[in-house]
Image (tube, rainbow, N blue to C red; front, side):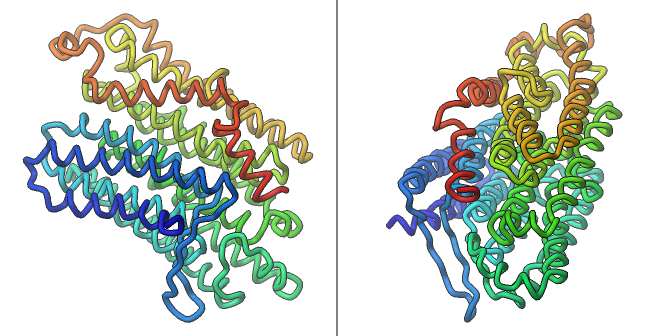
Length: 496
């Protein structure tokens, strides 16, 4: 029964998607019940899997597709980090989407593909080899496209085409890399580092080329420069989809895949010895600084947040290139910390747009007096991105900076400092407008009178994730914290 749990986790969302697709459009309550019921059940199953993993078990289910090629679902410590993040944030994003899309058309279609997205993300989390990872990685591409083009406007359709052009091209490159390494060593399961070690003496140049192909294919979804162009354009999608792309699924899938390649296919020791990590660290650093500089130039709130994501996700990749426990912990924990903070910011941006029609930065003047709770949550998310304590972002940057010093990569500290200053430069002016600028007279006061801040289903998820962002920083020393789990992964799995 334990080994069936990974499959059951997948099926909760797949079955929910099938039910939702078949529901009539007017069945709003039943659709919401199926959505939320599947999300809560998934969290319960993930918690059960986490208990098994802590106890030293690895629940696993495998199906031989072809001789020598299997589809493998496995729950290990890293899988539980990503699956735990996705399942928790999906519950909040589902609540938010229910409130955000109230009264809009085509909700059964939207929430059906929404559930397929979470199923794909769970498959990526639980994949036990590159073949299984690729199947769900491409399914994620196909299931997110209908969400990006949900509104059906010319702008959203154009964004969808660009998204597919980038991600399907990246998927093709990734497939070439997977086929190449399969031809060299067969079906490599994650964690089976002996295969690459046995090939290494004779095939260094070829293994380097395959590594580059894998990183290039995954770097599209991870929004590494210059492969990031789809992400800001996709911001025409509804706010719940933006939260999905940036904090829960797509960009995290790319970063998570890079972690798997470095640690579970090639191995951190071989990657370091062969000089594969330094070029990756340089690309991640360029992305961090470029994303921050581009964010400074944006006047649209969601596009500024999009370029912030381009920058922030590369902290994860930078951390794993530092070749030491502290850098690894910093990179892995930022996978979760960035998700909490960024989903908070996109929830708040959606609240501003839905309640007061605010889309541009210069429209934020005085909004803190009209929407104080939403604005407080936005402030928490912004402080976290800058790296101010006690929000979780401070913890990530502390580990990354300390890890860089211990690894002898002092230049990384300069990148982190410059990035934090740029983060402050593009977030603090927003906070100044929100809290200290005078209130305009052009807002729809009847909406403000009705809710005072915004609708409860829009407000609660933003407040919840903001509080979790603070809690992850305040209680970072506990074993049950994101840092505690990242330490368990690092010391048990990768750097014993």
